Image (cartoon, rainbow, N blue to C red; front, side):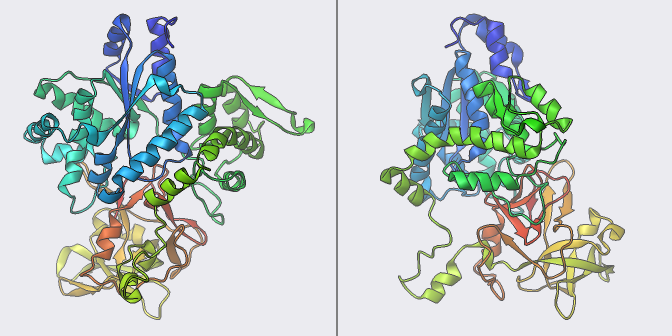
Length: 528
């Protein structure tokens, strides 16, 4: 692959559809002499879904350009990122990722013999690597480490040291994998610039960096509030794909943040080179497009109906998923899937001891009493200049008093009569003499200046409506969370805002019966 291409043609393949390239001149120099060595790493945390076809399509481009490509299953990173993957499940999840990533690559015609697969712990526990971690930690400041991981590593009020190590380890991987460039999403840009800054300080070469845009998912935040949404899993049945695509946001003529259109651009055209729609002759008849710009133009001019676009994507997506589904029909891979990702709703402890104790130890988000509230009044705290008292209607006989410093980020006037999201079963705490009876849930991003926004319930919500995590609709909240069990703290580390500004827990959406919980602008923010 790539032998008959000129360096310029290889560069075009390597960089097409990317949002940004750092060190392009260095890539040109390498291509003038030999093939480029690239690596893509994925932390083995939650199950890969259809959005993973986006980096897979770029890996296909790299191979067409003759690149030597390494795929890193970053198991140690998965553990370091606030323990998103429990230690006892690390090996199983690596096995699952390896099987499913290989199945994806095979489904798009990528020859696996041209790829190198490696597990992080195969080299990250060596004496040399460990010494470099110590060397790097003596140079990188806490501020730089936290800033570098702000959009990738889970950010919490009291971060674990492991999360601060994460960006440095990703930088060192470039040296230990002996590559010329690292490929990833643009959300990793700060980690890439940290690598460019500090690797030369260790005596190692500065690498180039290739960044994919953060494309919206097939199901996004802008969607009918009456419809439930969920991502499309690689093993979803055809009827589930149809059902979920029907619910995807795809407004007529809207080409912005359109996940269905993005899938056509970033997956189907690079891989297949064309896209077909079938429709009644009176609406233009069947048509095959060989240029994405024509698809985008006609959709923007409402010459392509959203239903026809979705139907075309459904057919193409199922063609990609069919070989993956078939591979995972084997008993061995079904067992691997179930053991690597045990059903969180099943209580392992039940039957082994006291069922009540088992229930109290179960770490599930349905135990949180999260509700929609409406701010009735906002007043200054009598004994603290930075705190305010918000009276909030949560559907009870009396409003609850919440003590917060939110007015430092959102004006008093903007809070008045606003719908908000509250955690209502924390133990009340006195703050400068006034008891706070709930917690306002907000999105935040740390940086040079901290930014905070309250979470927004769907339009039309009423005070007291329950907020739940999809898949955990039926669980009963605790009357009061036991502070000694630290249930809120353990669940909170997995709360985050998606790239479409939707509140999530472990990649599952927070929602009410009317739709999703969102924030206005803080993509990738933390929730607390």
